[in-house]
Each structure stands twice: as structure tokens, then as C-alpha cells.
Image (tube, helix red, strand yellow):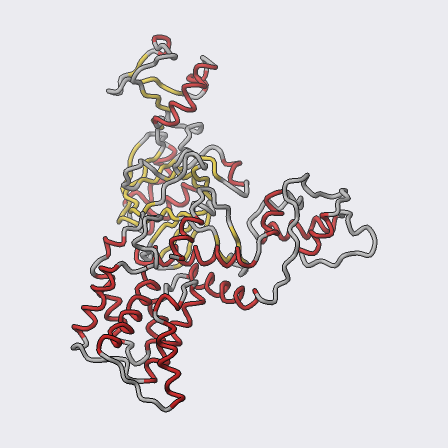
Length: 484
């Protein structure tokens, strides 16, 4: 929602550039504005927030043969609604709310607001087209919007099925349970005349197919996660799409054609060159009690064969208790004890019940927690992307394991692609630099935008809606802000 300052800025500039002349004395313009505002329903925005009822009533005068007679003040109200709707569509309705504010809209003012005014004026005779131009053009947005439109149309006809109790024992092959009958209904499968409550192999295959379509572990077992997804109502899915359409609007200005986008909720990474996706891989992100922060930055350099200095939280909560339990923990994990100046200390000289100000550093190598590469970008939280020896965890459907940094599957390949695409001199030497085992920093050719964002709904390449977990509980907060 535009702030009062935004509204004033937009309207003052609009009136200045249109010489204070009335703009809405034409039924044709008003009808096209009405159509454009109506289309916002498919973006998850409410037309009534933008004087839609007033504009409808004016349009209806055409049928009565009455002439439009608007005062300058009334004309300005309609102009203000037009501008606010365009701004919310292009920049996000919640851009001034204190939610997910890693994308600081103020960085883009006044250029962003000026662009909204210019767009509004350019399409005054076709205001419905102005909305088409303001709407984010990313595939993620377009696909979600299409799915939202389809779900809205189906909502009135979609049968409401009883929920399947998700917290009882998981349903699997060989079980007889009255919930199996409901499971078939939720999967749109016919109910057999006999043994309708029996879970047979063919049902397990249908469950596995459903799980695969929705980004769940495709094991054919209807456990709590699968049943919770099946129990979701159309309205819940519509709300999820609205929330994530708003996230795309909020990130709209920040997305350059050359970018790396980490989806924290989906635990994925996508790399784009010239606006085209060239890499799609899995990640492991921060767990609920140590979340990966949302942020916008630029990749600046890489560390090859990195050492790992244990961050304070991990040292205090994980490493120190482990050392107290097992005196051999330091050696088995190749950890060196250092003083604050970086001088090496003898572990035997440390009182581990009261160790004082020390650092733990893990040597580079195949067992290092950062793997072979770390991808660096400026941020106050000391977050980075990195390789990991824990490759087996990428096979999990929900990958919230880290202490905040992002582990990337195929991290060395991503670094190779970034070095080549940005013309870094190190592009041809990456393999030898890694095999040397020497820790060194390598600059990227030119900085590349990186977004650590958060999307809990997306449309996959098969056109299916996928709802991800909301590990950090951000969806209800953004939905409340969007509805205000």
C-alpha cells in the first residue's frame, strides 16, 4: 500500500506533467481503467482498495445517457487511485510495511515513483495496458498468476473433502485403515467395492506420484507431511499464491538479468544469465532456530580451499559441548585452537569449562565444513554460500540443516559458471587452483546480483503448483500486511 508520502509524490508529479488538466471526462478511459483495476484480482490485489466502486458507478452513467461531470478534486481522486494501483502492482503493496524489508524500497526512490508516473501518463488513453506494463514479467510471477486465476475460477466448484487425520500412524502398503478411503478421494481415485480401506501397491504408486509433483519425499507413504498437503483447501493455496506474488513484486526492481537467486523456503538456487535460467540446483539452508537471513547483495569473490573459523553461535552451542564430551573431538575434526590474534594455542592448556576468548579454525581439505569453495558477498551477518561434505542431505525433501549459511549442491560448478560468465582471469585455472589445496581468494570478473529470498509457492516446470514449508513462519505476517 502506498504511504501517504508516496501518494502525494505520485499525484503531485502526475498533475504537474498533465498541466492540472482533468483526465477522466471520457467514458472510454474510465471503462479501460475499470477493466485494468478488475484485472488486479488475478494478481491477488483487491480492486476496492483503488476506488473501484466509485469508478464503476461513473461507468454505469454511460448507460443512462448522463454526461460525466467531475470536479477537479474528484478527477484527482481517480488519478490518485490509478497511480497507487500501478505502484502497488509494480513495487509491491507492502513495500512500506516492516515485513521482509531486506529489499529497501527507499533505495529506488524517486526513480521508481517517477517511472510509475511516466507509465501512467504514457497509457492514459489505455490505462488497462498500463497495468500490463507495470506487472512483473518474471516467469515465477507469470506462472503463479496463471495458477491463481485458475484456482479462483475452480474455487466455487471444487468439492470440499473431509480432512484426513495427519497425526496418526502413517498410511503405507499393507495397512487397513478407514483413512485410506478418504486418501483415495483426495487423490481423485475410484473407491473399490471391496477392501476400500486397504492400502495396496497401486495406491502407493499414486501417493508417490503426488509427492513427486508437490516436492515431497516420494516414498509412497502417506505420512504427516503428505496428509497435511492433501488436506489443504483451495483458499489456503490461494492465500499462499497471493503472498508469493507479493514477494515477486517486492523483488521486482532488484532482479538484474545476471543474477543468483536462493529460495530459502524451497531450498533451491537458480542462476540466470541474460535473463535465462542456466542452473537449477538444491541447497541446504538455515534451520528454524538459526535462520538464513533474507538479503540482497552482489557476489564479489570466491574462497578456494577455504579454512573455516567457527562462528560464535556454533562454537558456543555446538563445538564447545562436543569438546567437553570428547577430548579427541578437536583432532578428529582437524580443529586448531587460536587466540584472538590468530596465534596457535595448545588445546591441553585450555580449561574447556572456562576457555576464555579463543577461536577454533578447521583446516582446508575434503572434511572441511565449507568444502572446496565459498561464494562471498558483502553483508552484515557474515553469510555466504559454500560447498559441503554433507552431500547426502541434498536428497531430503526439506533441507533446513545449516546454521545460517547456504550449502550449495554443485557449488564448484556454480563458481566455474560465474567465473566464465563474468570474464574472470581465474576461469581457466579453477581446476588447478582447487587441486593445489592452497587457500586463496579469487575475484569475480564483475559483481553479480544475489538475492536470498523466500518463496513458499511456485509453479514447477510441469506446470504444477508446489507449496513449500514455511520454516520461519513468515507467510502469516506478510498476508496480514497485504490485507491491510
